[in-house]
Amino acid sequence: MSPASVEIKTLKIDGRDVGAREDQTILEVALENGIYIPTLCHLEGLTEIGACRICLVEVKGTPKLLPACVTRVQEGMEVMVNSERLQNYRKVIVELLFSERNHICSVCVSNGHCDLQSMAQKLGITHISVPYRHPHMPVDASHERYINDHNRCILCTRCVRVCHEIEGAHTWDVTGRGSQAKVITDLNTAWGESDTCTSCGKCVQVCPTGALSEKGKSVSEMSKRRQFLPYLTLMREGRP
Image (cartoon, rainbow, N blue to C red; front, side, top):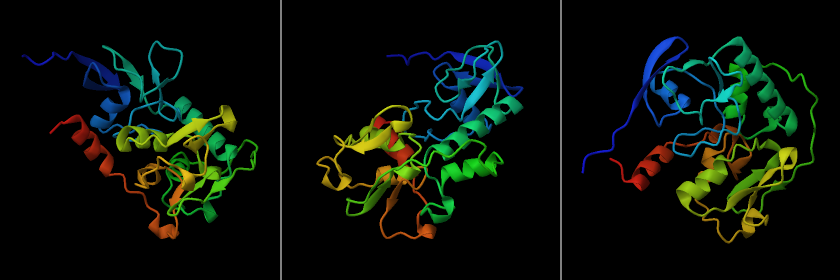
């Protein structure tokens, strides 16, 4: 049987001519060509959901900004990934993430190892220009090894996806809508009482902030280990 044919598309990203398979996204092609597009919900090895909108890009002829992680390439597409307009949008998005929950870096176990904190630094954010909401969010420390602090969650759903797609347990899910949304274990039972959790810790390792952390770890020990994701994905798909 002959292999399925794959059509090749040519496009421009920030003025550079690049080639791509027809099934690739703008983000995948940019990464392959060493072009940086900031992301928060994206993580290699997990499905893309376009939740954080940090990776918004401009496409010539399209009035809307498009999420690079879920937008497929098209022939002749001209993409801008680092315009002043995009920088301003990304700053607003990150500011809103900080204002929505109680992100206090100085007392967070992930201080110095936090993707949200790093993103704010990259975007040059030194203060928040919108009001803080100061919600009363719970902390679930019922698991014998891990902690879930909703105050630091940005709802990227990396934990939900890795638990379902890689571990196969589907312990995590999301309940509620808008600012009231939060990740939950099983049917909103305490994490320590979950019947499906395997205590593998993959959710903790892929969490971009201090929302999920290991008990007994100091700030300097809370760097996340994510190298296992692409490897496990390849093994599951049977690819060499």
